[in-house]
Each structure stands twice: as structure tokens, then as C-alpha cells.
Image 1 (cartoon, each protein chain N blue to C red):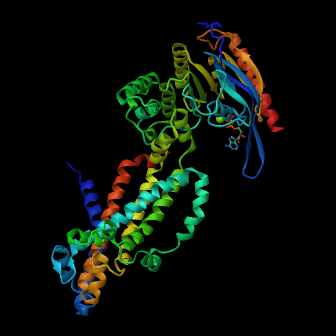
Image 2 (image 1 turned 45 degrees about the vertical axis):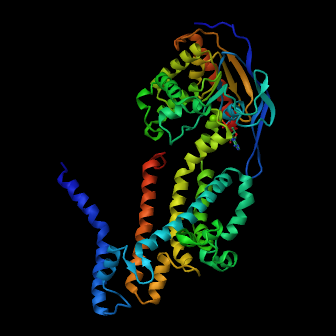
Image 3 (image 1 turned 45 degrees about the horizontal axis):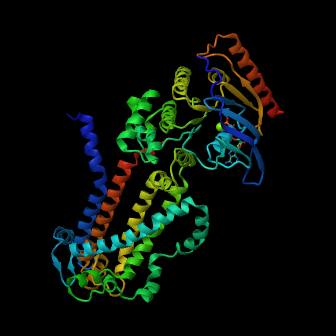
Length: 284
Length: 263
Ligand SMILES: Nc1ncnc2c1ncn2[C@@H]1O[C@H](COP(=O)(O)OP(=O)(O)OP(=O)(O)O)[C@@H](O)[C@H]1O
Ligand SMILES: [Mg+2]
């Protein structure tokens, strides 16, 4: 049986986060009525309708769900690439001072360049080449799928995710208590075991945090990546294309989907962080 | 329970060990100064000395974690250049793996050596029992008090079954009562498992209670000032007059060192 006060606190804890969104919706409904122009602010039910039927085909753009799926696959590819380069490199840079000195200036030179600023160079390098080009697939359904994964897009997403993952891996490893490494060595750990059994777990909370930030940024780079020439699908494409058709309801529905997907991914990470790495918060 | 002098093999020898550190602003710190020490198999040697005189540094060199600037430490005649499975170390500071439960911490040495899971957990359980931490097997280090963590660290060192155990103020954070229990327990383990122990402590009483020999170090740079041989049988009684006499002498020596440091 829940006591009265815990019931109350549960109700408020659910209520408080929804207050601002509800206010926003009220303002929206009111403003849409006042403005009365679909091209500036469509009524909320149009947008909700689009969100409620994500598999419905939108004129010449495919469905919302299919575009989100394409975007997700792109982001995951660029992001997994960023993680599989960023984590090992960061761990090694964090542990070996020499490698850090060797690489750090070089990497920091590129860090301030916004992913979007890479577009011209990336286009010059990769053009509209895609995974289909890489695998030599030229026809069929597979071609359509693979051709959606342009190198240039994946590169932009990669750049977005790479730096936060790299930095947090470096700091995670560099911040590992030396005594823990020494303990492992005294207990007979080989260099490889020190990496696997001490450095990685000790740095993992920081790495997970970087992975989380990196995924967020990768996801944000999506729209710019999907504005690249040759893109005919994805949420970013959906938004820009809907704008040219003056379908602002689709624009807003697309934006909300981006927000929801991004937030969900972040939540999942947060959950992992809290569950598995409670020791870090609690270690005195 | 006098053990006599049956084992006369030198298991550990420090020869003219010096250690110099360079600080970030280019100063030289001489942390250990020409230390020579021979430890026999099955010896229990305690090291006492003023804070900062290089005791931990000497243990780290002996454990193979740090090279000596000159001189060397040898294990059965072979120079120690890296950590050896035969030499264990209980650190002065907090050293448990915070992401592992207590039992896995204790089992980590055998795990590094590739021991099967069931076997190493059995071993870990045994040593947790020895240090009286059985009921905390599943707890995480952050759930333990400082003294409990230290006991787990000791169990972890024992579980690796080293011939020589280097211990850096292992009982520093224990309350007086637990401390005395742990001292007795350590003596029991030392006697039954026939280990060689090199034990750093700030407590002269502890040193006189435990050791076959007490090494008194001078203030920085750490030199050996004197080595006291203790012939009292075990278990030792603190009421024994020679116990008090020796404790007093060592305390006086240390006091001189600390005062010298201030002047
Ligand atoms: N990595 C290091 N770099 C520079 N100086 C160091 C380093 N480690 C130790 N020292 C210096 O060497 C000296 C001896 O340090 P050490 O930790 O061995 O002392 P200690 O005898 O164990 O002291 P305590 O009893 O307080 O633990 C100190 O002056 C310390 O500042
Ligand atoms: Mg010390």
C-alpha cells in the first residue's frame, strides 16, 4: 500500500515535467487559431495526425517512419565508426603519454572545424559515392538501400561523434587511479590484462558519457548530412523537402521526431550509466 | 613459539638502494638513500620511520613497480625489474577495484593467472573468511568502511599466495580492537603459510609486537638508522618489561629524527 504522501510525490513527479510542454501546446493551439495560416503555423492536429500515422506515405517523400529508419541506419554507421576509432585511439592516447603528445596537436587542429564545414571537401573526395559503390552493387532493392548510405554523409556524422568519444576516452583513461594499475600489476596482470581488466572498466563511465554525447552530436549532424546533394531520403531530407513544398506540418512533425528519437537514445544511455556504473558516483 | 633460526636463506636483499625523484620544478628529492637490507626466508621485518622518509618508495622498488636510481633489490639473488608473482604488496592507500564486488576483488590475482572461476571464487571465499569479511562477499568497495576495505585488500594479496608479502601500513585505518585482532591473525597466517613479511608501520608498538627485526629509518633522505633484533617469543605480552623498554628506545630514536627534521 502506498502511503498518502508517497502517492502525492509520485503524482507531482509525473506532473512537473509535463507542465511546460502542455503550456507550449496551449500557446500553439491559440497561436495557430489566431494566425490562421498553415504555411506559418499549422494547427496542432495536422502535426499530431502525421505523428500518429508514421507509416503513411507522404507525397513523393516516403513515410515518416521509413525516413527515420534510413536516418537511424546512417547515424549508427557513422557513429559506430566514430566509436570504433575514437575509443581505442583515446584509450591508447590516455595511457601512453608519447602517443598523446604525438597525436594531440594534430587532432586538436581539426576539432574546432564544425562538421558542416567539412561538406565541400567531403563532396570533393567522395561525391555521391555510397556503400553501393563500395560493394559494387548496381541494381535491385539492395542497391536502393546501400545507395542511401553515402560516404560523405557517414563521414560528417563520424566527425560529429568522433571528438566527444575521443576526448572522454582520453580523460577516462588518464584519470584512472595509478594505484589501481599498480595493484593489478603486482597481482600479476599482463599489459593486455591491465588494459582489459583495469583501464577499460575504470574509464568506462567516462567513455559511456562520451558515447552518449557523441551519439547526440552525430544525430544533430544528421540534418546537415542529409542536405548534401544526392540525398533523397532521411528525416533531414524530409524536412528540407517539405519546406520547398510549403508543408510546414511535415516540417514540424519531422523536427519533433528528431527530438523524440534523440531523447530516447539519450535516455537509454543514461539508464545504462546509472545501472552499471553506480560505483563511480558512490566511490569516495 | 620461538621459531629459532632454521631458515637462513636470504630471500630478499637490498643493495645500496637509492631513489631520486625530480619534481616538476626541477628539484631533486632523495627519497631513499643507500639502503642495504637482507631479509631471510620466513622473516617478519617491520620498518618504522618518520613520514616522508621513503618507506613506501622502498616497498614500491621491492615490488618491482619502480626502478631504483642506483643499487638493486634482489629476490633469491635475481634483480627485481618488474612485479613478480612471488612478491605481493598491500598498498597504503585505497587500492580495490571499485567496479568489482569484494569477492571478485579478492579473486583478481588468480584470475590474472588464468585460474578457473569456480576455483578462484572458492579461494577468495577462504581468504575472506580469514579476514572476517565473508558476509560482505557481494558488497562493493564503496559500501565498506576504510578498515573493511583494507582487510579485503589484505585478503586479495593473500589469495595470490606470494612468498613475500610487502605491507604498507595495512592496519593504519583500523580501530584499536580490530587492529589487535588483525595483528594476531597476520601472525597466524604468517606462521601457518610460512611467508616472509616486510611490514611498514607508524606504530612502534605494532612493530615490536609483530617483528623479528625492526628497521628504524632516519628522516629524509631515508637511510637505515638501526636494526633491532627482537628475541621475545610469541605471542608477545605488552606487559613484558623488555617489550616496553624496546618500544621506548625506538620511540626515542624516531623522536630524534623528527626533531632533527624540524631544525
Ligand atoms: N612519484 C614521486 N615523485 C616525486 N616525489 C615523490 C614521489 N613519490 C614519493 N616522492 C617523495 O619521496 C619522499 C618519500 O615518499 P614516501 O611515500 O616513500 O614516504 P613514506 O615514508 O612512505 O611516508 P608516509 O609514512 O607518510 O607514508 C617524499 O618526500 C615524497 O614527496
Ligand atoms: Mg608511505
